[in-house]
Image (cartoon, rainbow, N blue to C red):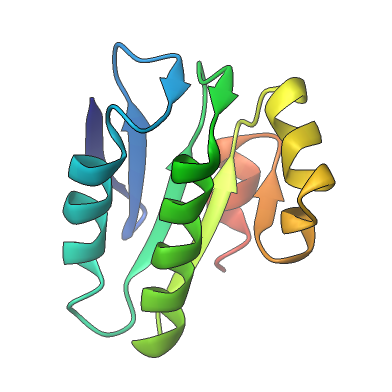
Length: 112
């Protein structure tokens, strides 16, 4: 479902075996990722490689994570967004809320 690894001192969450981030998996993903923000200054990247669709519950998870990050001096960034999914971010005006990068390396480098 979702796997979290550390790269350069930054947590990177990647979806495994999924191409849709929808109501069927949002709750366990949300719980797992929110737990990381229990520590202050957590830096998290969500790698959306392979995700072809996100529904409203998926976008709600991103907003909950951003709120948790802001409340605990953390950071949240997103990378590897499929063009169709990126268009959804734009339609919802969320491209103004989240830092979105085309490549994970660029995203990780942006923390420096």
